[in-house]
Structure formats: C-alpha cells, structure tokens
Amino acid sequence: MRWMNRNKPQSLGGISWAVLDRHLSYLVSSALDAGWHGQSNAGTICDMLESGVMPDFQGGGNSNAKMIREVEKLTTSDSKLGYLFSDLTDMQRLCLFAAALADGRKNEWGEAPSNAAICAMLPGYAAELRLKAPHKTLRPENFANHVAAGRSAFIKRVEQELAGRGIKLYE
Image 1 (cartoon, helix red, strand yellow):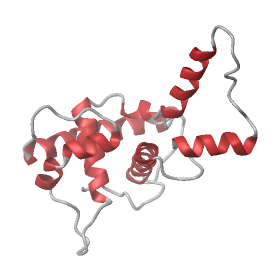
Image 2 (cartoon, helix red, strand yellow; image 1 turned 135 degrees about the vertical axis):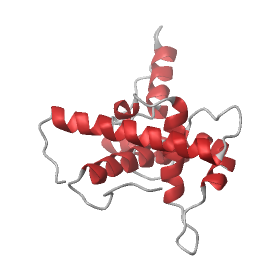
Image 3 (cartoon, rainbow, N blue to C red; image 1 turned 180 degrees about the vertical axis):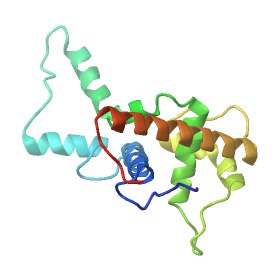
Image 4 (cartoon, rainbow, N blue to C red; image 1 turned 180 degrees about the horizontal axis):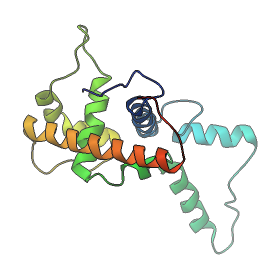
C-alpha cells in the first residue's frame, strides 16, 4: 500500500501511519490473545494476578452482573485511537485495515499481496480484526477505491486532531 512519508517520523504521513499501526496492533493482539503483558485477555488476567487486584465476585444480588461486566472489560477492543477512524464507513475501515495488515505480510521477495489476493482473503482479515465481513466479494478496483477514500479521510482527521492540539508538523 502506498502511504506518503510513512518513514518520516515528524510528518503527517509518519504520524498517521504510526497511529494506524498502533491501532491495528492492538486489534490483532487482543484477537490473538498474544502476549504476557498488554491488552490481550491472558495479559490482562496475568497483570491482575501480578498486581494483586482481584475482581469482586463475592455473592450478593449483583455478583453475576459484576462478573459479566468484568468479562466484558477483558474483551473490549478499544485502543483509545478508534475515534480517529469514526469518519470512515465500515467498508473503508475494513479495506484500509486489511491493506495495512497485508502490507506487513510480505512474501519472500518483499512484495505485499496484490489487491486481488487481499480481496479474496477479506473475510479472513475481517475475522482477525473482529469487523463485519462484506456480504459480497469486492473487485480489486472497488477495494482500491475504498482504501484510498479511507486513507484520505483518516489522514484529514489526524491532521485536524493535531491542529486542534497546536502541534506543528514538518512538511
């Protein structure tokens, strides 16, 4: 996937790529339950045990509701960056995330999967990201259009957020 200036750390492209990468890492790691520390279910339980904080499931009329709320907290996938993707449609979000994941999964020649290959594997990417899979298969041209529109909307949102915080970027 083509992303302008993603290797320049203080540029809009670099910051937006880092935000996207961090959000995707959160979504994928919690789905895979990977890691001792972090946002996965096992990591959260291990962190609770290490810190000595135990959820209160001790009897009473509300104990089942408390247990359900605690379990729901473990399965929440909120990286605190999700609001930056709120302007994207569901399809733009799925296509952008799938393209970014595929970009990180290059073959032995250093090439990312083609748009046609990503379209064929889109239901698998949707399951991995815990997003809704499309009802029909996308053509590679439509996929590329969704990625471009999603990337554009996301970068504009990051730019607005940075401007609102008074952060200046290198051009």
